[in-house]
Amino acid sequence: MAKHLATITLIGHDKAGVIARITQLLFQLGANIEALEEQVTRGQFSMNLQASWTSARFDQARIQASVADTAQDLGMEAKVHFTPPGRQRLALLVTKEPHVLEGLLSQSVKSLGAQPALVIGSRPDLEPLARKRKLPFYHVPFLDRPKSEKQVMAILEEHAVNFIVLARFMKILSPNFVWRWKNKIINIHPSLLPAFPGANAYRQAYERGVKIVGVTAHFVTPQLDEGPIIAQEVLKVRPNEPLASIVKRGQALETKCTLRAVRSYVTKRLDVHWGRVYS
Image 1 (cartoon, rainbow, N blue to C red):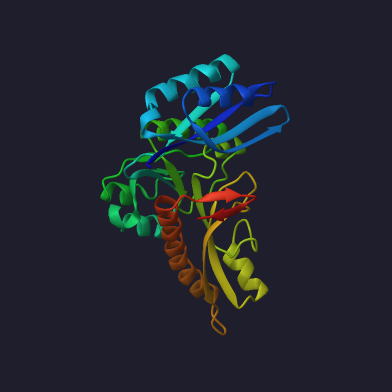
Image 2: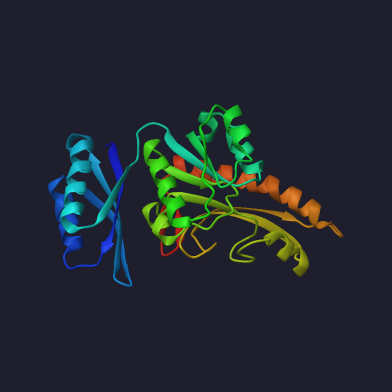
């Protein structure tokens, strides 16, 4: 039997009875609760809940309005991400390196499994590439992170985006942003995590003299480069191979690994339990 899926996030000041209110509401709306995760950090309550409906009981407008009304009554912010029956809409966040963006946009929608909806750049360098593919490009400089993230969230809402890929996006997203898109942001990191997190991963590997290097596609979490791993690719370092060659070959792997991760995300239902991805 076909199921209609949604992820609901709720954020606000911690208070008693919040989970009971939301779960009771979903019961009244005919939902089956498939997963629920909540946390309280310094008085800030955050909840991420996955629910499903049969076709007979699914009413998207009613669900959206009911969750919004309940959140307003609780004095909290709620967001409902519905999983569409057709192609999911993908937002690409970039800085200046073009290789991952080029690799994703070179794929047909059928091959990629998702519909690229827009490109957001912390720099304007890749606007010509986005325009060439007839995609809207938004330059958000990220000089003031809270203000920039608010602008990005508004753009994502406007374009009905379902998930995000950080295609060599060289800015750190805040926990405030990440929680609202929990397990819906895919990042590509140029090392075999958990080794060599952070910046200059290829140089770190080169200087340590490793014999195998690789790349990791993972879900983004508030802990930098520690999110659940979706896919990895590796290459053997050649004897006396210079850093420039390692970087070039690694960048090709970054594109390949990101494509694998996106296809896995849209063709399978990836579940995350205790920091591990299951498909």
